[in-house]
Image (cartoon, rainbow over all chains, first blue to last red; front, side):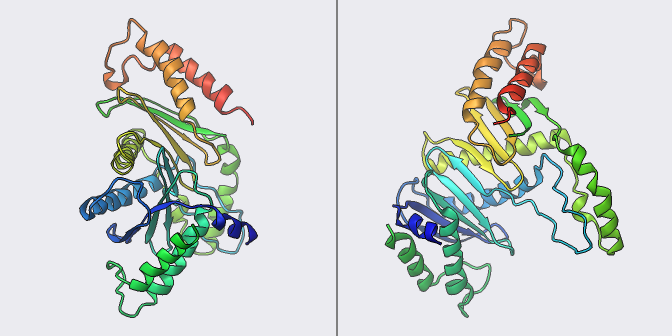
Length: 160
Length: 170
């Protein structure tokens, strides 16, 4: 808890957040800081779709047999291949978080950004609170919730 | 760290070299498997997730190429012309990527606890590929079907590099 709080004191540069539905469509995008090349909506849709496909392939590329759980009588959930979790390039880092229902959160940050897991968790909370609990929001549809926008801005920009 | 596989793709998108190292823990994981399948059978549950289909070798090559090609283009697109894709990690493995100016692509799959291997792939290109494949007078300029790449010196150099440098206990 203490460490997280300290992490949030550091300057953070989160470039962009994309939310990809389980079918591979882009349902939300927001740019917090300039840093990546400007993309129009069509290009963002292509990026979301491409990443969705690449993520699915990366689950199939397992070089090792999946780890076996210790034998017991209690049925356990098998460990599922997660697909891409982190991708690094020279200028940015892409963290991908997939929910149990298949929605993917893609967060583009600076390469040295600390505590991305904490940021991701908070963004997921905001999504649950302001998008999923919104009675006027239909799942798998583009998210247009002003409170979600404001919550994200408040969280990502306020602690800078 | 553990190295699982290594691939080289040429600029015609063809896989000109691939090598897989058998996972070293295979012997120990083979033991609990019959027990767990039998316990799953007694529970009346299907052991479906345990029998995950393993890909054919050429399938793997194509899938790896598709992944790195898409991600490389995505990185170019988003981060500008000078940006390059370095690696990605899943919960099972980590994929490292290095591309030369001639669009020769070097890909290595390792376990997840490995740092960035871009420098190591650069070393393989510089010290092994250039020395033993490019400078080989008997090797063709292009390598259709991997011709001329998998020569004895290159294979031996790669094997010892992976064993002594990459798989060394840290």
